[in-house]
Length: 551
Image 1 (cartoon, rainbow, N blue to C red):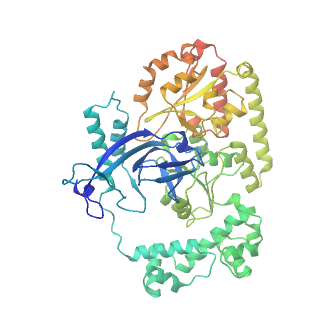
Image 2 (cartoon, rainbow, N blue to C red):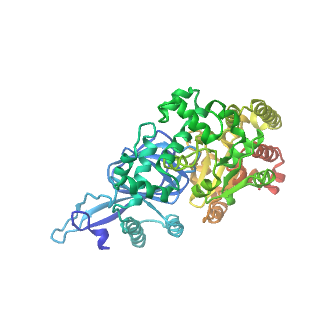
Image 3 (cartoon, one colour):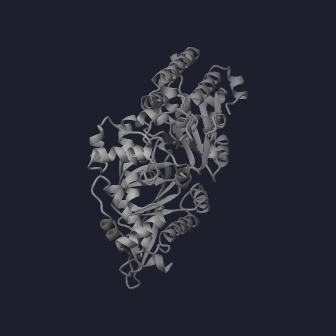
């Protein structure tokens, strides 16, 4: 333990566990600011978010462990529909001094970084942590305190592992010059500047850059500028001369020539040819909407475990290539091999945007709301008539469903969606997108009053809270995650007194739903499937509903 016990000033110290708490609603709502008075670990067990930790924007994702120093401030920038969940473990540190009878507070600092440090944990380590965090023991027994200390020092040990060597290398120099090009592409950049940043001679820099990137520095920079120009043409109404200046081309005629050489068409005609170009979608829902408008993407990124059958059949029918990826992982190498002319998707971190922008132009930040997504793509690809046709069809479906659900809607019977996860339980908020909009806004079903305050997509929910809500209708989603199972928590729920006493359970108004459709497949076809399931469930006789759960 010597590496843990000695801080940079050489003094010995000890750590003492203080508290372990799951991340609550405030960690998942944009704009919330959290103050941590003592050192803490923040463990992310599901989802993604963007936080500002002590003034630095950070992408937060599944499997990450953050160590933060005392008096840290975390602001939630974005969480939205990203399934964020995790734990906060606070601790205290004291000086270990054999000459004094009392411990003194020790000002602990992270071993690497500024005021916080990030570590990526392995699946096996996360599984062990999950077992510990959910092991319930009554009272503060000696054994429990020992276990907590052991757990705390295990986290500290993962933090103090050998840090990577930060010596200067040619590869790091090349990467530093690439980062400079990406940040200053709108300025005049010379090979001499880039070589100086890389710490090598201009001749050596050009040779090594070509070996590493497969093209000359000047070609790399020109391609990057053209990608940014393509984005400007798609996202703005700026004129060619303004886009040329904004992307680092001083002469608009030279810009037009380079653009046509690179894309095959002039800047003015680029948008008109977009639907014939090679599109890679980072989302099955985006790909589905494109296909509905008559635009077949070349490839779509999918997580096989979460891919619904209707999406798989659709992509097989249209021969869309599947880029298989793990949950929360974007396969950059596979996307690069696809050689896309355009990359489209929903949420991308700034770091991932930088990586993908070296491959092609990107269109990101797209909404998960189907109506809005149809409208956005219709404008981009000049498919307004097709979009209006689908929107009219969905409106008619919604009106028909409302008529069949009229009695439930008028009775304002509370409808709740409970998610069972490997790490606990959560409920669907009333002001998010996807199924939330479908249930509580488009169909007009009633969310239980006490759940209206939930700001996140899925909010933490205890069994006591579930008992207090006591919904009349309950949809249960068993969360699908790679490497983790919900079966233990599902069994715990079914065996609890809370479950047996729920009104929905007593009246046989519980319906089990599929994550692959209700969450990851809620597109055009998925919305139709979900509406059919909702209507068939809520309009069945109680006993019939119980005997025919929605799977």
